[in-house]
Image (cartoon, rainbow, N blue to C red):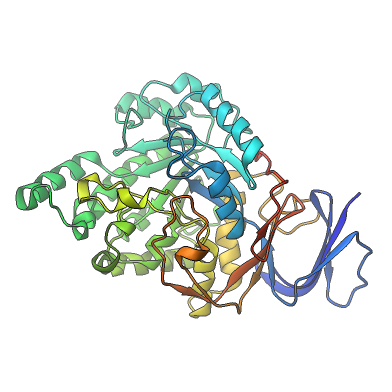
Length: 445
């Protein structure tokens, strides 16, 4: 029996903030001790020194690029970056090479993660116009969801056949997670941009090409289908104020339709293209300041349920290309928690709200078994965060395989000092304990 005691912590959990300690027995939280109570004996004790102790972050949308794109990132490197950022569980997307569109390829990913991932993991099954049988035969307790590109994608993962969508939304046993951008709107806007600029379209037109109308049309269709068939729908990466009218502010545990926002849509607006260029080229695009403000307010009100990253590394060489040749996406998983705590430092939100949206919320929405909270009997996925430890993002402290960040030069005032996965200390003051591996996430469905 291994007993690990974390003492002298400010525990932030379930809307409360209090001084206390946590006792971990093997993989699980054995007890939560409030300040003043007698501390139990332990094999090892870690003094948190008055810093925050929070549940580990659960990021429900990452692209760790394995298999097939490992020159950009891989499960080993990107899970290490995640751990350093306090992210203890991730859900990886299917647009790899080959695309994860059948159960065998899904199992191949699970096997690889069991061998190399420091963090806990799950993987989406990708939807196509003709793989419904694979989706129907997938165990909902084993897989986080099915990813549907509604309107915009690459390869054969664009699901644009009305009958395929109808059958998917009416029959899928899995949570449906959708990327919503209307391809017809985007194509029209691309043609207009090419007429004016040829192949030299400036990146500041990205939110004009992939505009609010493209997002809204696709999101509205997804919501209409979900409402018609009672589908469990999760809308990924909202980027516009207009889409918010499709969502409810009701309790997230009772919702059938939920949504998330990415950290970059909360931080940047369209003016930032002039200074950061292709480094902040994402799909959906970063849009106006009014959109950014609306998204932030919707996060606070409960209309938006969780925060994620869409961590999607590309090489710096790829990101320095011309607009049409530059892939969309960027690395963020190492910095998402520090960025959200920066909003606390600026007085824009409370620490408990960060924990609610990055830890509790994903666990609730996906029905993750025994994770996302500091509770007796739950897996001991935890992070210690120093809220008074300033540091600046630089090339020297990046852990992404791609070696760059859209946040370079930004100073944060909070820093992850320790990360625990399944009761194991895997990161401590910049040092990794690579002998430990994460576990496959399970879902209560």
